[in-house]
Image (cartoon, rainbow, N blue to C red; front, side, top):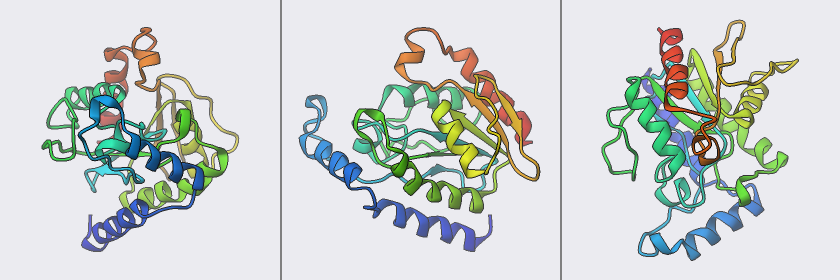
Length: 224
């Protein structure tokens, strides 16, 4: 990646972390950061929007829904410090995208190779349910990341991220989502779908480690 693109990514990160466009999300993320969860009472919460994280030269762009209230909203890094992230980063490690299998906090030494992780909505939403207007406010950030990084593959974590990616790429009609779904975009990236690594899916067995690894292995093959 050329120097000016790296600088543009850094400028975008600054814009994202200062964003206050959605009053409901601002109020919620900051309230959670003040009140905290008992287990993290002695920690200082991030309480701001989350920029993307990873390799600026990534060929694989991983798109999630939104930060967890006591995960990324606490730690300041996407998918860091929550159960979904435990599954995601363990899979990225097993498939060669991460240097370690766990993501606990921003200073834990984690780095990604060939992958960039972002969310469709950059603030933790109440009940993990962003409103359509909030998604619309946030999607330009992901659009700019895609423009700068130019990945060959977008891995969508769940139906919400799949829908967001289809909006970003102006896909009409929208291809159907399923675990393992694959859709090639003319003169654009390939979309890959996977069930979200939420506890609802992992505890029930709807998503297994092998299933998630298979999607990232396929992403690696397509990105070569």
